Length: 426
Ligand SMILES: N[C@H](C=O)CCC(=O)O
Image 1 (cartoon, rainbow, N blue to C red):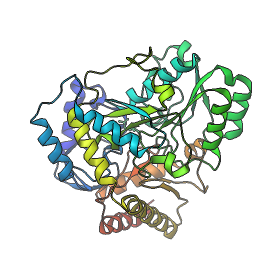
Image 2 (image 1 turned 120 degrees about the horizontal axis):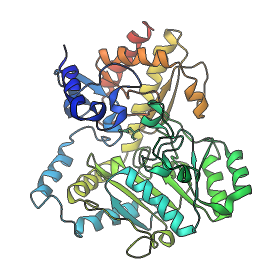
Image 3 (image 1 turned 45 degrees about the vertical axis):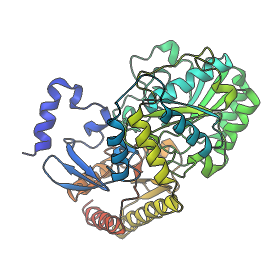
Image 4 (image 1 turned 180 degrees about the vertical axis):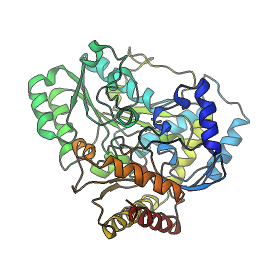
């Protein structure tokens, strides 16, 4: 019996479902989740001392690989000075200055402790700023688990079959309009009818919570246009794709500037962090400058700021994102070749350091409905085959994959070889 199995059994006694976040429970693929005890570079070590090449990267933060020595060092050093003050510290200003320097759409930024806090507050701010209640989101996109956003959501909510969670007041859910992702026409239609009632559009500009879905040509531009015409706030949720698909995130890649942006994951270098920021005119409405309330005991935590700043410094090195993208492209091409050799209907998506794969006859996957049509049974078999070969992928067909700067050519070749072997058994 594996240690992971025993640990999972023990965990279920006092932790609901044995996990502290539902997608970890392997409901999307079946079987016991793997319990890990260490992570270094591109590798994970499980409780039974088995090693895996990791393509989850803690769901995105580990862009430099796990436990990067320079990141660990600054956290250790910072810890000597105190773990938390609940009062202003200079390093928060250093972080704010750096983020505003790097991101052209960012005049002001506030640090929080998670992506959920960031998106939840961005929505409240947009409502407070516009004086309107309705918000627009897209089916399959996931923006954390605050009430307004758990309506036809992606990620774990979708994997577990509860995209619209019980517990969200109906009156609140009614204010969330969920449209078809990448459908510019539908967006235009809704805005032509009730644009003056809509506070904001929130979108993952590269969606990573319904697998990896890039924006169709013109989609982000349409969102920008309808927001400009109606006075709604455009929020890019770059919790996943920020500092991941490029140094300026998706807004840099697609050259569309939002009014507000939310961050998490990479910006915390592996520590619990989120951030929201954007145009001064909107951000000035946040307390204590304005009346829209938001707060957090651990917001701007010094250890998290230190890890995040070091990470942002290291990913700013020339050529970093080109190299990351090359690795992800090489992996995607290799997976495709492995499927083709075995006559398995299969296709891939990739943007920078994010990648996705789909067991489907269709090519050019850009719609949520196409993702849902994928062969989930094949995905599950492939998943467990790869796990057996020492490759750790996201345990759901509705999650993107992540690559780190620590993945070597050899790691990628080993992964492709494993895929060849497993595809032959499907
Ligand atoms: N897609 C989610 C995060 O971005 C997966 C992580 C989680 O819900 O625990």
